[in-house]
Length: 403
Figure 1: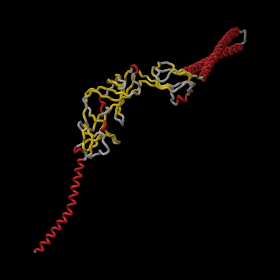
Figure 2: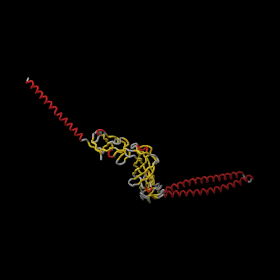
Figure 3: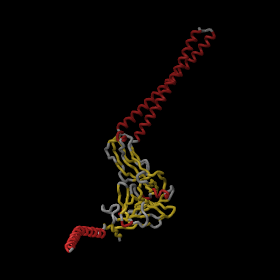
Figure 4: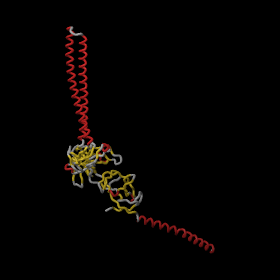
């Protein structure tokens, strides 16, 4: 009996030892995992966050604009030759008809002399034809007198009828001579008119040796110098002498976001500002493209402003302020929270349980430090500032509000 109890006790001790050997490592592992989980919870990725806010109610929209001259044209030379005089340079103000360059063209001079000489030759030939007509008319008059006299003599029986036939033939021949000379005169007149037109054409080309300004403006480019050879091939290649701009009025082009299309109407007042110059001009919306650009989803609008004193220059970056019909509020998101990817524009939003959710948004106007969010965000959303590569969808973070 005692021996059986000893055996049972020994077996119990052996089973307890086996249980302890198996349970102890497992318990240690569980404690280690719990400790690591607790440590990870305490060491979550810390991120700086800020809240999306609404703007104050505004009755105007401010858009960037690009300035262009109301009129701009390249100036070419029609005459072929060498530039002997250049009167203007970049930045010079010119009036309509002012001389810009003068071209020496010996070939054109010779063409004009030849054309004029040919015209004088044709006129002299015409004078000779007129003299021949007068002579033919006189001869025809004499033939008519002889014809009449012969007719009377034949009627009186003094001469034979054969004499009358001869005088009739001579008279008809002289009348034909007059008609022939008159036809020659008509041909000569036609040749004179054609040559006069040729002289006028060459004279006009001759006048093209003086290149003048087509209207008032400013020379913004100069691509020629004294001594340059001007040829028709240069004109065909589009190598202009000057570029002339009319800056008395400016065209300001504005890309209007799709969300603001309803606020833009033709004839609407617009104020164009250049912050660097502390200058502003008031104009109006003249026209719109009536179609959105596919990639940017914006509507091109043109604002015209009078530019007294040429305060603003073509190519300037401006701000265009357009007053809207009703006040509206905008959702503004800081610019340093935006992440641009191939798929679009995103922000990292801290959601429930402090989990990161990358949300795609559509942006409107850029105000510098803040950007208008047209869709994708709501007021009060918590977004990550300058998210790093560790900030990914589903990652639990420790948000720290930006001060």
